[in-house]
Image 1 (cartoon, rainbow, N blue to C red):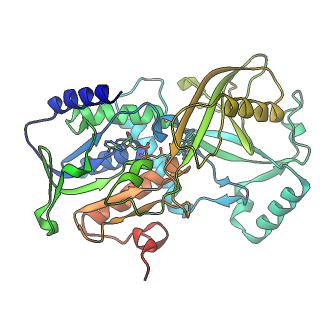
Image 2 (image 1 turned 90 degrees about the vertical axis):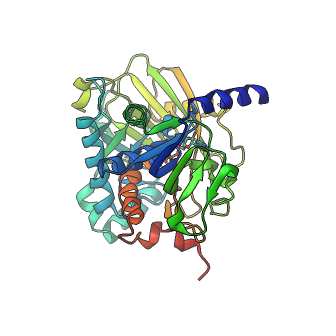
Length: 388
Ligand SMILES: Cc1cc2nc3c(=O)[nH]c(=O)nc-3n(C[C@H](O)[C@H](O)[C@H](O)COP(=O)(O)OP(=O)(O)OC[C@H]3O[C@@H](n4cnc5c(N)ncnc54)[C@H](O)[C@@H]3O)c2cc1C
């Protein structure tokens, strides 16, 4: 196993250019690294992304749901007024600009039903809605029978109805990577931090193998805990598993949420109209903090299937089972900022289960910081972890 990795690295090294000068070197080509790179290229910067391709990165595996109300506490999206339009505009722009298959839509609306699990949960929601006025415009409370009268959806306490979005991060990242590669801005290689040469003086920039750059940004997801530069950050990575199933004799057009979610997967442009139904559904997602690897576990898959069938009792056939690790921070917010010692070193990470909605806005903020402009909002700034 070790030998294979070594051989692969040597082969990949051969593909690296003899020497390359750039403005910004980005480590990690998941959603975070690719979106940042794309935005910087648009601003006329020279950019190189270094990424070790991996089949189970969070961006390839993740469900990509943007849910305006989530979690047990019915939380809204942080800074939704700025973050949500920024995300939706960016994905629309990608659909307009990226060379893509004609039937690809990166982000689409999904009507959503969130079912109450108990009377207490419904009361909790009613109190919250009364206290936080903005929820009133966002959601309607329903009994589910009127929506799914033919199917016995398990929602004896009623449900909320609202609009969510599904971002196909797997396909989007693949297309962004192709766009970057076509501009010589993506190199597939493992980044070995021990070979990084940083000047104490930020103006001196940095060197890595054959690359020289003015600035370096680390977007390397959950593996950041292994970094000597960023390893002390309070990351709390969480493994997650998802199933894709085919419904045998039913179809679905709503995202159903009751702890577990059932996300209808629309595969063609004709389905931009979300009133269509589909028999292909993604089910998720589990949470696990101890066993951090990207292996699927059949027991977890079975338990996801059972939970899904308890919500939507119909025959389901498993088509795919996937696992990955969310790069989550202990306080569930991303972190952006500059290294306390090396002022040419930056980080953008900690997107947890909210990468789809947060990455485009955070990339805009980080781009400003690289230019010495703007202030990262306190809630997502690296400085919030410093002692003073
Ligand atoms: C099961 C699951 C369900 C999810 N569901 C949702 C959801 O519904 N909605 C949502 O918004 N988000 C969801 N997420 C989270 C979302 O996918 C992430 O927030 C987002 O993809 C993080 O992107 P990233 O670029 O920071 O990390 P990643 O996608 O992990 O990318 C990091 C990249 O860095 C590379 N890398 C790491 N170390 C090195 C190195 N030394 N050298 C070179 N390259 C390196 C990796 O190979 C990888 O390509 C889910 C995640 C999982 C796992």
